[in-house]
Length: 197
Image (cartoon, rainbow, N blue to C red; front, side, top):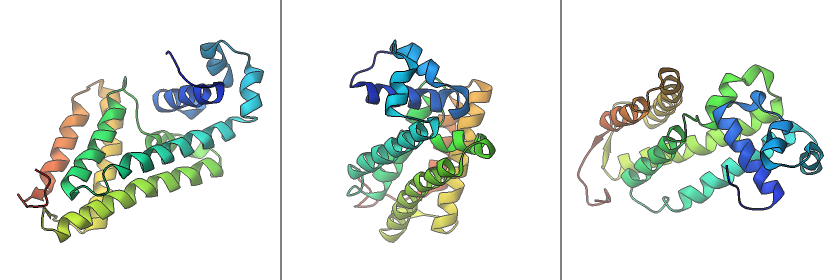
């Protein structure tokens, strides 16, 4: 993996790669040091503990989502929803990676409370965006939901997380896109002047 940026950025980039591909518990500072061709002490200079690195990784996810949704927030609800789906599809398209929630959910009992709390903040950031998007779609008439907005958001997030895991287990890259297609079909989308098409 060819990386750009300073040492700290490279450390975080590799940590994100490992975080989503093998999990937080399954990589070490030595793995990152070997990949970067540096001494492990160089990583400890930036991150005295693995927990501090994990928190920084989660903060980067948070900022990235904030930046990603800035480009969507003023768009019609359907464009926002499909943009969110595209983000999650991007995770599974990267060699069977899963999103951060799936990692922390799997390793929950062996992770620190600080990591758990930070992940909950990240989860709520995604959930709130989805709830607002569904609410706006209901309000402008472009979405018809069979459940209330919050229940629909929770159903969607659960389906997305679960299908990422199943896609990995089955080694089936087509499984997750099929699930996204099914979720789209659950929302009866009206052709509407604000639909974005």
